[in-house]
Length: 137
Image 1 (spheres, one colour):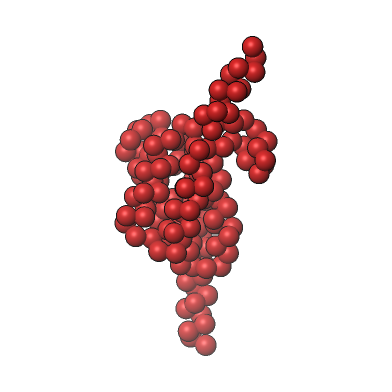
Image 2 (cartoon, rainbow, N blue to C red):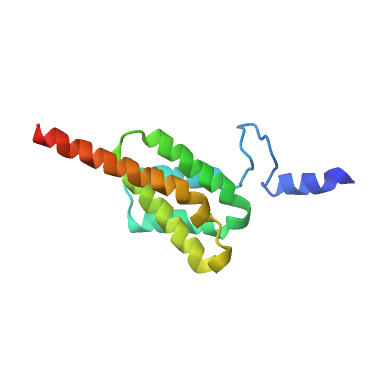
């Protein structure tokens, strides 16, 4: 039947459009990833960054849209907090580099994160300039 494929996809945690939270797709490890991302935003240690990138790259084919959306959401949530934005930049960089190492030219994260990385770089630079101006006053 036509629903058999959709049922098996849903059972794998890779559902289609229009999930209950409006997500484009779902991923079985999404909550675990978001929790790890929250801890990276607090403190970007090498072990936390590695764990985050390992999750994102291990399930890259099914999870890349969810991962990029979670990173975008974290950027909006960070607001003007330079430390969080810098930690998020480290996370994006680690995910993109690990993806490129494991998947070569088929890596999905580098190109899809380019706008976010540009935005983070601008945000960190703007915040640093504002901090410097405040210290001069």
